[in-house]
Image (tube, helix red, strand yellow):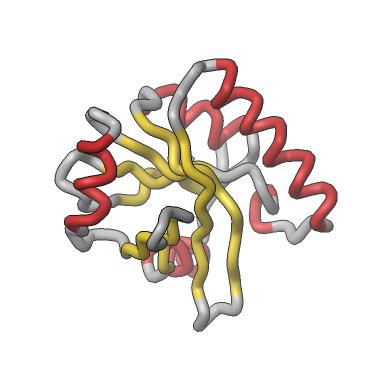
Length: 138
């Protein structure tokens, strides 16, 4: 079980989430975003999630270590034959950024399991209306 401290929760809840599309889609937790909803609809997706493998339990790793972890996560995504985009979440106030993937139609239980496997505090759930929420691993 992963314990998430209030400061870590604040970072996730106040971050900007950026999907590397053309143009990029930038959204926040709890705010409906029409572009995000349209992106899901364009893939005929019922849901999407943002999930990361970098910096386990908030421990800053080297770029090479994080790249290795992201490639492991990408392997799982591709093995499951899911559509995805490269993305990131960032918090300018906290000087924090982390690469992740936007994955379409990943089952919530699988997303939770993958987040825990990669020692992540949370993952982000995105329903068809484009209003994202944080799902905590604790």
